[in-house]
Each structure stands twice: as C-alpha cells, then as structure tokens.
Image 1 (cartoon, rainbow, N blue to C red):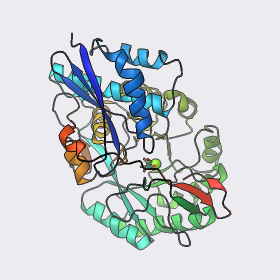
Image 2: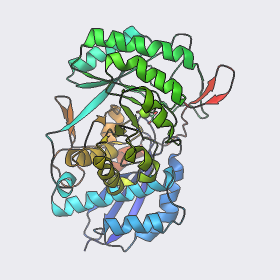
Image 3: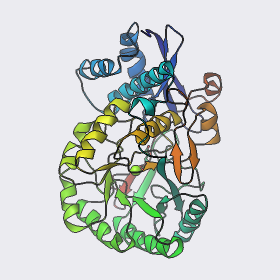
Length: 403
Ligand code: CS2
Ligand code: MG
C-alpha cells in the first residue's frame, strides 16, 4: 500500500494567491490538492501544516474515505470554509495519487465518462451594456455555448464582476478591503436592459447567465427573476444570501427563472433543504470549498434525486487543480449541468501545468493518470504571497451590505 511519508503546503501568487497541498508516498507517487480560500489563504495553510499534515504521515494513501471521515469527525469542530478547504485539498491529492497508481484518469475511477465533455461558461463583462455585449460576441466567436453577463451600473463607481481587463477578473486587491458603494434600485433597472440587448445581439442559441452575488433581498430577487423571464436566462446565481435557505421559497413563488446557489457552501448540510425542496435548479458547491471530490460527489448524488444539476464554481481564485478535479467529477456524474470557466492568467497556467483542454464550448479533463495537473514548485517560488482581500459593499447611506 502507498504509505504517506510527507506533505507540504505551497503558498504562491502567480497572478493571485493560491494555497496548494502536495502529498508524497513511499513509492515516490505525489498528489496535489487546492486549498485556496480567497482572502484567507494563510488560515487554511496553517490548518493544514499545524493540524492536518502530522495526522497524515504513515497512513495508507488509498484509504480516501477513511481519511476524509478522520479529518471531518476527528476535528470535532465540523464544517466551515477553512476546515472543508483543508479536507478538500487532502481529498483531491489522494484521488490524484490513486489515479496515478492505477494508471487511470480520476474520472475513470468515478464510473467513467457520462458525456463527451463539460459545457462551460465564460465571463463577458464591461463598464457599459455595449462593452459587455462586445465581450459576449467575442466569447460566442470563440465557440462558447454559455456566457455570463455582468455590466457596470450607471451611477455606481464599481460593481461585482466588472473588471478592467476584458478576460481576466480578480476581485481581491490591495492590503485592506476596497469599499464599494451599492444601489439595488439602480442595479435592478440595468440588468433587464442588459439581457434585452444581449438577446438582440447574440440570439437565442446561446445560454445567458447572471450572478446577482448575494446582493438582493428575496422579494427583490423575485422581481429580477420575473423581469428576466422574457430573455430566458440559464440561471440567476446567488439571488439572495443563502444562509437563509427558506428565502428561496419566496423567490420560487414568483418566477420560473432558474436559480443557482452554493459557491460559498462548505458541506451538504448547507444545501440539503434547498435541494430536497427543489428550491434551486443548480448547485454551485465546488470540490475546493465543499470537502473535495468525495464530498462533492455526495452532494451531486443528493441533487440527482431531485433533478437538481451541478453548476460548479470556477473563478480564478480556484486554482487549475480545482478545475481539473471538477472536470473529472463533472465528466462522470449523471447530473452535470455546467462548469464555470473564468480563465486563469498566463502565470497561473505556467505554475499549474494541466491536461484539461477547451474545445467546442466544452472542457475535457484529459486522460493523464490522476488529475492531470501539477504545481511547478520552483516557478511558484518566484511568485511570493502578498495579502489581499475581497472588496466590501456599503449602501449609499453607509450600511454594510453583501459584496
Ligand atoms: C463569483 C466569484 O465566479 C463567481 O460566480 O461569485 O467571482 C466570487 O466572487 C469569487 O470566487 C470570490 O473569491
Ligand atoms: Mg458567483
């Protein structure tokens, strides 16, 4: 059996901060896992180095489920973003090792391919509706079958999802959080106009998505859902803060616009009620923030019982290791919906060489044994960590709000 003999945490910043775990076995096999928690990278690094790695040494790397249960139940303090990102990193690395030893890509260990590839969505954004449509036409030109639309809001200096650079979006910045100002009424006016213009320019054969990013109350979200119905969105995401799972029942009562939620969920318990009551259509939880391939597969299986599909988070603060793991799982499960694909920078791609490839609007994980991704530790060292925070949002009267 492959015995774990060492593990180390690599924190680097090629384009943005990433926390990566590398596990090594006595036969020389190594595996990688993503442990990145945007704005809290060192918290997970410390959790792994101080509290997890000492417990891994000497264990059988093949015992993925037992190690998952040991780290989950053994911590006593269960769930939460830091704990579950740390468990996720161990889990991804162990699946990587198992695949390498078996000589098979991880999706083959998960039951084999259920589709030719994973449909992805790109991020069209712009300061104005016209800029956003121009970016969306570019994505359509590149063969994307699904495009997320985020545009600036007249009268607001900045808003979630709109970047300076057309293709690369990294919201974390500065040493202390940037403060944005938010107006729901201004926002609710512009999004329907954006979708009307998008359907006019792009037609009806492309899926259009939008991320509300936790910023509406339930009734405001219901309003937006109704206003967008004529434009048939693929989904509106994070329509309202989802700690209050019951709030989605109110949105459901008013609109048929599909709902997606879950990128900040860290376990099945955060989304069980949403899924069992069919309050959502897509679950956005990820292998990184929700405990790895092992736990994300459990969430996907529960969702499958209620015809809820996956729509996993895939922003730039999830490293190519998470993207690779998500694609192996997405290729194998029966209820894959769509995979977010926010392109990484050239530096990030160089530090994390990977096998996944884009073609015809889909990503495929490739057939390299394991996850098909690694970290170039020497190159990673040339990109030192620098503390960064996500922005915060305040209403125009100064009230703290969701960003
Ligand atoms: C967003 C993310 O991709 C998305 O759907 O919600 O960009 C999110 O803002 C970041 O991952 C936060 O770190
Ligand atoms: Mg989102």
